[in-house]
Length: 354
Ligand code: GN1
Ligand code: MG
Image (cartoon, rainbow, N blue to C red):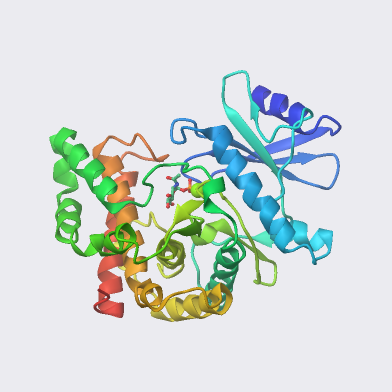
């Protein structure tokens, strides 16, 4: 709490602190909702410097993209625009981030009130609105020069890299964890070839690099209280990538009938109706900048990003939980099993996609 007050005084020197509530949905950073004696609320975030090597660069990425979006939506009234795009606070000496007494990095944004998020989706309208929101985000960032962004995590969605990490973890893990995870390990190995197809298209230039968000799970979309898409949040991982993983990570979370860490795998199924609703909204907003080849492989993009998450959760489990925040000892294994179950249901519902 002492540190939070220190950060508060740097970002909001003229305000009176009221309260700080930790928001626990993210797996990497520490996020707090801050209230003052005035109506405006704020979000303070301590960025995980173990996961992100260049935190000032990451924060600069986010600020640049927000400024770009504010410019693109310049015709909207200021109040409306501040609900549609994140707005970053500066410190009294004009910095976008602050390094606290422990050497931790913080950034701050205005909180967007009268908004809601969804961890799971039960209404096709939310899927459709989510599709429109992420489609529009990608559309509006198309003319942003990717070379202005640093690569916050090199090879973040690179399948070969994720497999290397998995194989390394497999060599070094405890026999107990390996045994518990054996079913997931076998599934990962079985899917290896198919899961490299998009990587191949990317590496040989058949599918182009764009500015992508790279963490488009549905809980990173804000909706207004009527359920219309409002604002894309958590832009930490924005960097060059292929469109498929932004299309797909939203599908991974929208079409899963349960949360990504639901233990009861019978509850984990793939909802095809939501797939169609999301795709419709996404395609309406992305514009005509999608090639036939890109479009053809959207379903494989969804399957591949579900697999990447399954593999990363599994790898972290084998590594004794060094990356993701966990709430209990087998949390990462549960997440991995959940994602592999989702792939199985995806296959049943969607059929062959490669
Ligand atoms: C992490 O921290 P959060 O919840 O925004 C992860 C994403 C995963 C997600 C799974 C930098 O995101 O890649 O999709 O968990 N972010 C990083 O819920 O690894
Ligand atoms: Mg994130």
